Picture 1: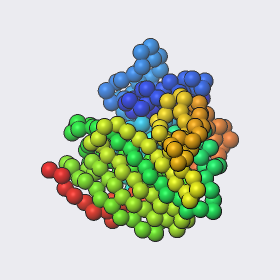
Picture 2 (picture 1 turned 90 degrees about the vertical axis):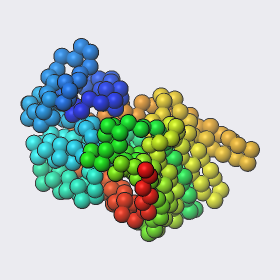
Picture 3 (picture 1 turned 45 degrees about the vertical axis):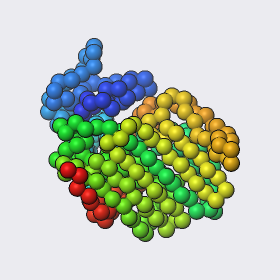
Picture 4 (picture 1 turned 90 degrees about the horizontal axis):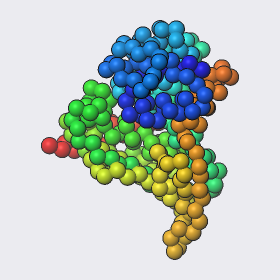
Amino acid sequence: MRIGILGFGKIAREALYPAILNVGHKVTAIGSSGGVKPDGFEGAVFSDYSDVITSGLIDAVYIALPNHLHYPMSKRAIEAGIPVLCEKPLGLTATEVSSLSVVAEKHRSFLMEALMVAHHPQWQWIRQHIPTDEPLHLSVQFHYDNRDRLNIRNRPETGGGARLDIGCYALWVAHWLGARSLIAATGCQWIEQGVDARTSGRLLFDEHLELQFDVSMRRARFQQVIIHSQRHCWVIPRPFNPAANTAIWEMGSEGIEREHQFQAMQYERMIKAFSASVDRQSKTDLSASQRIAQWSDTIKHQFEERIVK
């Protein structure tokens, strides 16, 4: 498959470009406003992202642009009949995600949100082992320190903020483990320069599931998921961007009782799943993305805002 890449920032450069090559596909075109490309790259480089879509050089496109461009560039590619793998979030609002679903159905195009975590075997394993007859309590933390005011994650006009950038992972965990119907949402957003530098809260779902989460762009890098049922507790120390070798800890009264180990490259697995769906001419299904976007909208509108000066 000939794949074009829109945006050649860190995630595309360090994760997706190597993954595409490692699973046997080709990168034939890159859209980069600054002309950035890998060493030795022999494909075409376009400063206008739309030119990648209309170039005739690609069979599919991976979109790794700033958040505010995910919706318009995905829509443009879908309308051109180009299958799309787009970084999260697909849109800044649930309305944008729903619109993409309609456009994909109309043009019979395939669109997939690039949530690489869904393809890692540790998440496949935990979903098979959680009890279905007990309430679940989820605790999700994801932090990093980014104080560069010019960075896209710190700019409201580019869809910045912790809620959209990493809060979506906490919401994805809840959805992955069975949440569907949100019944209560409380929490706080700490707003700096127009974006939420930190969002923390509690969501209750009708499926007897509770999510407590804390995401921040002003703390030392850290991530962790804790899953509690009545009789079990699991800790996932590297839930979202694990190394090739990772583990889930099954906790007991004395600490770690068992360690379940996994080995996988989740970006490569995601590319394989995407290309297989394209080959099968699979129908676009954005139901999970739409729910998560709706929950994210609820957080934006219902959580208390505190302005940080």
